[in-house]
Length: 163
Image (tube, rainbow, N blue to C red; front, side, top):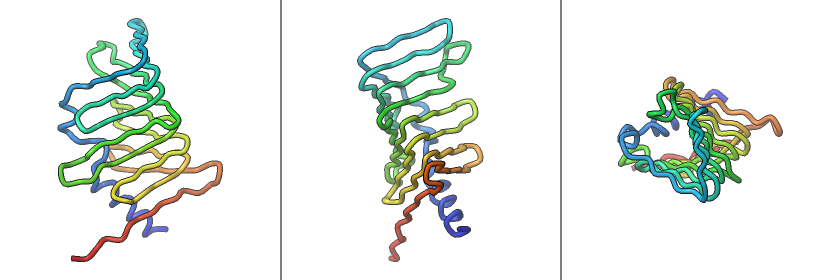
């Protein structure tokens, strides 16, 4: 168990997922079948075949809700829902793509936390991590995972090849 936790921590801390600085400086493009913007609540709801892109980051979902700051100059939180919602990003030039999917993906930009809920799955270079819920704290580089239905979290770690 301790070995698995160490490998899991190593896997995610070295991949630097969800935090590529260059991506954060790129424009955000969102396309959908429809959009509803509520200026009073500071939310924009995108429905139907939603695709959000920013640099190498791409989110595909049935529905994305963007919560703006009070000044409405930047995002505070993003909620993506789908069957499943999908996320991908190339964390660094020399790193493989990171793929994530869940029924619900929440990105809390203020607290720098990503929550994958309901059938959560993370994958990079053949390494996979599955559970009912996966939470990744970007500041602490800390991951929590749980599965209430089966009570089990599943992880596959590919062996490193020796050169």
